[in-house]
Amino acid sequence: MKALKHDKLFTASTYTRFDSINGLHPLKKAVPEGFVDYAARIRPNGQVFYFNFDLARDMGLIPAEHPNELSNELKKAILRTFSLQIINEWDIEHGITYPSKDMKPHAYMATRYLQIQHPNKQGKTSGDGRSIWNGYFKGRNAWWDVSSCGTGATCLSPATAIEGRFFKTGAKDVSYGTGLADLDGGISSALMSDIFHRNGIATERNLCVIAYPDRSAVIVRAGKNLLRPAHLFLWLKQNRHHELKAAVDYYIERQVKNKEFPNFEHAHQAYDHLTQFICEKFAKAAAFFEMEYIFCWMDWDGDNILSDAGIIDYGSVRQFGLFHSEYRYDDVDKYSTSINEQRKHARYTVQTYLQIVEFIKTGHKSNIKLFNHHETLVKFDQIFEQHKDYMLLYKMGFEPKLIEYFLADDIRVEWAREFRQVYRYFEKAKAKRGKYRINDGITWDAIFCLRDMLRELPKRYLNGEHMLSHKDFIEILLSDYASNRDIAHYRKRKEKTRQFQTLYWQIVSIAADLLNKEEKAVLIAMSKRSELINRHDRITGDGLIHATERLMRSQKNLSNKELHNLFLDFVEQQVLVPEYFKKVDPHQHVRSTAAKKVLQGMLKVVKSHREGI
Image (cartoon, rainbow, N blue to C red):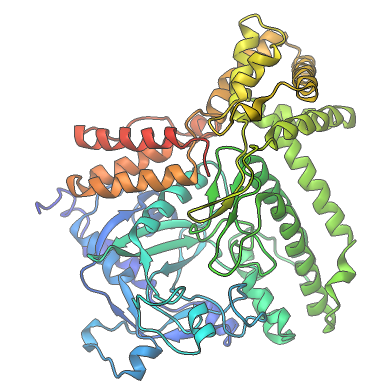
């Protein structure tokens, strides 16, 4: 391969910062029993499929002026740092050894945390089953955690706990115990996490994806604090006060270092601040997920989400096109929670933190039911409802400052709540077909697309239609899931059609008064914003799967630079936040005919799956 012109500018010394990500991590000292250490070796035959230059620059891993191109020295730095496989218990039992030149100097930790898939419900056997923490990186403005998925089978996998034996990395005959990650999963998580990040959704971010000839991958993830609630919950379940306090203190210390928390004079102030932080983050996240149709499997174990309610582990994360509220993920031996149940589990997470803080403060662990009516949970309920109000007004096309002003008055809030109720009525409408099985679970189809209504309604009103007929209204809402039986024009639905539009106009009128503008001017502004926010071909989980397949089939014909630009263009096509484009000018990065063809194909499948799971 011809050397890049930048190779002479960015030599091996440019990438020495990668060497500090070497298995060492302050959590090891803070909570010595919170992990299992593994020796690791460099795994051969790895190829850098994707590297997130923007994230690497944010972290300070590469210079700010570094181009979006993989120099030979950068590839070497990525592979020596992240192309790893652990030496696990099976290897040791079978006397497997590797040349010392292939071994890394430090051990890497697989962290312990609570996990619902395990027979033991106290976290004594569970944690990172196929992941390690590569270490941490002290960047320009923050401390970053870095972890990798697909680095080998650990003793903390559900398979080891269930069968009582260790597994060879890559074993084909076991579920939840192979230790490897799939390349398609790595690509889709890289795409989706970057889409979510650019849309302002809290999430871990994918730093790179390393591909291997057998289509397995190592997926490298970074975040300013990758601790999950589950990292704390196991010590609570085991009644281990010392370890629980150490883990919580470590979390707070990291938050202070990253300026997410202020400095506190007394520890009790920090603990109280923690509960309020968790309350706000989880209430807003649960509201956002419900309003944006994001399925993130929250449950009592606190496993599938970060401690700031950021999204982690995209294997079971889905973004729906419609309000498919009955979808449940089939996790081998049980079904997941549903979108409607996420609020309940987010609230329970906050309740568990209240229990944790009292346990730390007093040394006494109270029954969690005693916190059922705690004032913090009352606050959770308030924030949850307020954020749903905010989200609906935002989706209608109003700007954030106007929304805050609108919701500052109780009477105006009542109008928003009433509109929310009728909006939810249409969202919840389901197909007569009922529940049925799909590839990864069960579902019950929604039949109406409210995003289409919010996008099209201001246009219709601006064209002179003050009140749509029931027939026209339903035609806009109708999805491909609806049969003739599903769209019967019965009396109640006709009443809801009128109510929806009456309340919509009422909110537009209030906004016009607040802005001292005519209703037409307000509708024009709403229409422009709503066109982007409620984009017709918004990505779904199914769309992402098929777009990833298109990308994988085509990657051999693309250079690294073309591949990176393709990622950027595809991701920016899915940024639905007008405020983002006030800071970033949208422009096309893809130039070659081959790359444009791949991008068009990816966008085509997104469009064809826009209403799905």
